[in-house]
Image (cartoon, rainbow, N blue to C red; front, side, top):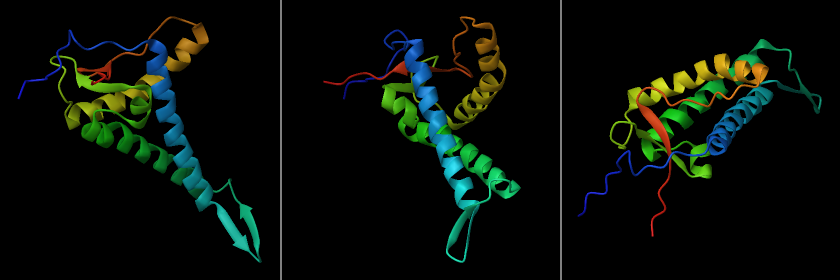
Length: 151
């Protein structure tokens, strides 16, 4: 069998718009799951009347917990199994080690996931406020590349 290991020279860096689209899809999936879980926890049925109680801390705590949990499963566990989160699969991207283009390990994926929160909290608002040309960065020795089309 021929060694089909990807090398960094063969991997093609994705366009910034493709990276952003993958990130937005992943964020929307996590937020939607969190909101659905929170809404389900906040529903009260009495005398055949369905009432949503969004002021309850349980609703928001569950929503946040589910959103973070779905994000972890999507970005770490799914990427560990398939080399890509759902947003990356949809946009034709995958995550590889920057050094040799091989499959990333679980610790690096957790580090990349945590770096994503840091990036989202610190740099995204700064970029939007100043309208700068800052592009999303690769982190912890992993990088995002376009998926190869196999014939």
